[in-house]
Length: 317
Image (cartoon, rainbow, N blue to C red; front, side):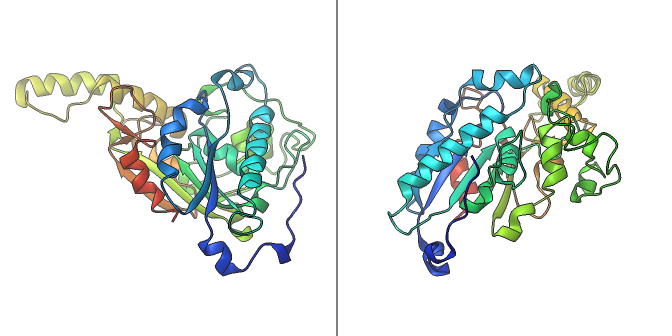
């Protein structure tokens, strides 16, 4: 599983790399299957700058082991296989040893950061940074304060690698995201914390990777009490108010609170608040009116809609 570095002489000139089409790999979000991203992939295939566009072939059931305390080895292995396949298909079409553009939605974004790393994960070293040039994350909760994103159970990682209580004062760039330390103890319990502990911020910039953090804005969280108060106020003062808070805003508040400690008045895409979605040191791109998931009615836009893809893809070209 250990990925070998390509020969420096076979990587092509800087001009070759800059103008050559790049293979693209889309990494689904938590409890999402590859089928949800087909329309997104079709949009990306319209661009000459991308040679091949693939989706990591995950099903919803592939995520189930993590719900009962399992690690993400199977997901990372799937990313690794898909990366190898799309690179093999692209090799030789324009230049030797093309490099990947990774598109990670939600949890797929921080799992991509884990896959890029040079340290072993459950005994396997993926070292994906050797074959990657860009990571674009869409609504990724990079700095979620939970031990496990979305309130799931802790993962079982090797505690010998990260003894409890060690390096508790280790500071990272995450301080302005609401968390001043990512400790070894926390790293032994959560893959997200492990990733922030090992690879803080845009860690692989030193290996030439360009990071882009995309997040929708416009869904402002409100508590249920706040919803009731606002609704009653509108009845008497502004019954035609088109910007009324809804139950969706209450649900957003609950999701935001699990990530950053508070959801009332917090802005984001309905699932991920902006404050945890922007990776330190990355190019930041906020999309008004764009939500985390497709709602099935086309009343709201999400990251995979064609008009939205056209906006964030400009950051990759």
